[in-house]
Amino acid sequence: MSIEKTLSIIKPDAVRKNVIGQILTKFEGGGLKVVAVKMKQLTQTEAEAFYAEHKERGFFGDLVRFMISGPVVVSVLMGDDAILKNRQLMGATDPKKAEAGTIRADFAESIDENAVHGSDSQVAATREIAFFFDTTEIIP
Ligand code: GDP
Image 1 (cartoon, rainbow, N blue to C red):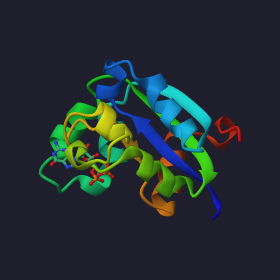
Image 2: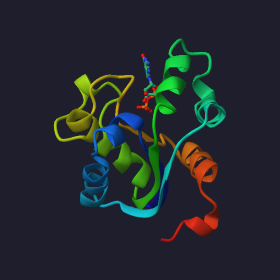
Image 3: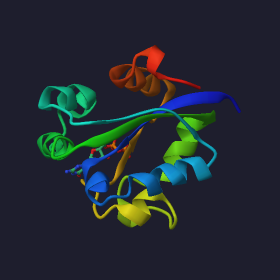
């Protein structure tokens, strides 16, 4: 096990449902510490840049429109194996396939509006944390 940092986004659907606190509680209950957090309205340019790896996918336009449809809460989570642990707490991309008790099973309705984003590798975590936070904003 190693101590890692990962990026989480509470997506616009979950912010609209007023479950920011319940989702942060799942992270904390799962052994992750919130070491940076902010609410943000993404611009189209930011959302396109953040999801650039998906730009050839058929759903890219819908994904960007959804991600700018309201504010998001971005956070840096820290802990033992934080990247994998966060992915486990999130559940499968499609909430219908997500294990009971995971964030997506509890709070998401569909694959396109699935409550949370989480970095899926060390390389992604480093890029995504730097996308939203200066090093001075991360307080372990
Ligand atoms: P994740 O790492 O579990 O978030 O999943 P992916 O990296 O595969 O996809 C990124 C995001 O694209 C997902 O979280 C969804 O919000 C969105 N997405 C994936 N598949 C679809 C789809 O078929 N339709 C739409 N509209 N969005 C999708």
